[in-house]
Length: 150
Image 1 (cartoon, one colour):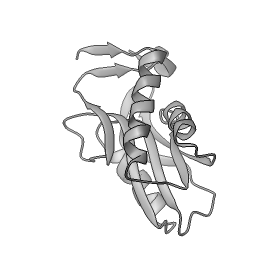
Image 2 (cartoon, helix red, strand yellow):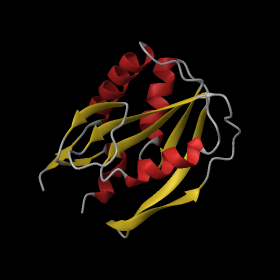
Image 3 (cartoon, one colour):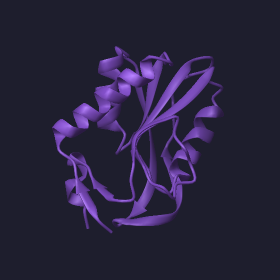
């Protein structure tokens, strides 16, 4: 599989551009980032959209750098989000099953509205984010995951 290494500057540009697109049509009250991949994009997008509330959940999708058979929610959302507009952020929608799990988990907490943003989406993903910067079949190496390239 072809690899694509992204720089911090490219990530910053992608996130700021996505934030501009999102805020034209959606005004979230808070952001939920999927740790670990969604943490950096969530912070940049939150700053650009002037959102101060960022919460996290963690989903285990890999075991020793290999994709797990099934994602596992290992850190749930502990904040009350009932009636709030939520933007869920992750770096990539690869298979899409971890995003499906995250969406299910958040919807169980009764938000007013939930939308999902990822930097990248794979063509084979079973989950279509509301917002994504690029569709690609390349293996993306993010600057925060440089040690995960193998």
